[in-house]
Image (cartoon, rainbow, N blue to C red):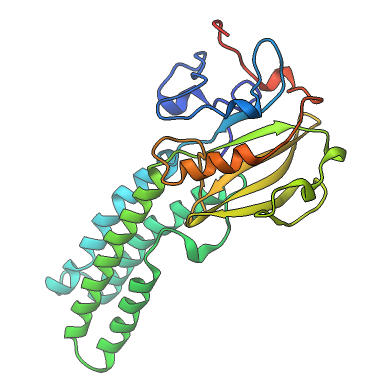
Length: 284
């Protein structure tokens, strides 16, 4: 999710990092890599080039519900172990179980959908769908064959839950951000891109324009419009469909990403950033 208001649109809302509302987030935060010099960057002397746009940290919308989900998952076994203490033990157990997975899956899906340029493929969410499906099959089998299979199913569900938490933690390891630049849309021609890029639209358009695979994810070019200005953005979409900062020190593919970015020979020097969208530090 983008920051509200033009003033914080690029650097992000100060509240996200515990700053006062009137404070300005730094141009470069811890572990962020500067945009390659060959791509240019807006400064107080000129307003051309690429800038990083930070998005809302995932912790804001995910941590609280995910933290509660293990409580409901563990609670779901008590009505089956200590029977007779609820009006319908199986119903209560099933309801607690569904709540636990809902608190895990829905906030993660919503957080990803709120990110501009993220994937909308539900099945690539950081959830262990394979073990979750196996648990469902074992649960159905216990109805027809043996009650013991129900406990085996629960063990599989618990394993799937823990593995899903690990996957979500992997997404958390790199903050969401993208780099973007204003451009004159009539000058864009995707055929000028290096051969490795898959072309979705030859001319500039709102939405996905081109992409290239990197590691288990991909770099994607998108078109946007804001303040009557047209933009091109570069996002790294990880294997789980989330937007991750493509210029971050702990990114496993940062070297390859930088090499790909340096291959791009874009000249957007004819279009300035709207002054309302960029912020300069006093030392700049």
